[in-house]
Image (cartoon, rainbow, N blue to C red):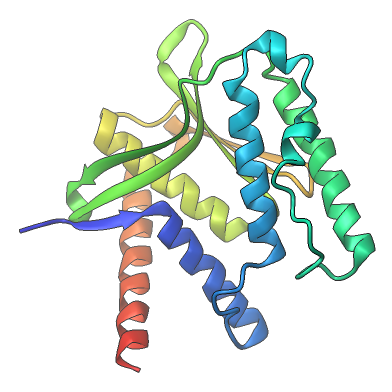
Length: 221
């Protein structure tokens, strides 16, 4: 029997849509929010930056890379002041974060990894934004996530997905999971050894079941 394919971006998209519906009483349809447009620009900027050799990074402000795909329209933003407030905060905090790793090379950068989570009967697909090897201990890896806004549900989902993925793919937890909320300038760090696999498995089981049930109900309607 073929395992169900579950991707992180589908689950994350559903979480965003669910939250918007709960907050506004309706979804946003297929129109991209300003958060999604900024997230797109951030993702490409991080990828472009760490693809460069360190010597070139020193001469290339990440603001230049961010500007390549930054939203040109005000659609979704409250007003012009809000647009520039978001831009300046993202530039400031992204410069600070990436500047701390200017000389390092990630093991993986925006790669799509897939593994079989047998207890959940799914094939879990995860796009890893950045993965770093711990100096002196190459088996220990740090997994990074760059979010535009501080979002507890998204952070929880990412942490549990990564924990389940690492155990099934590598037989151990990740060394560290690091989540940045760029607008607020916050950093959350989770030591892999402190995470419960059973709790993460239960979380993922409930998340996938709820997502599939709501997808079926929407299809019937």
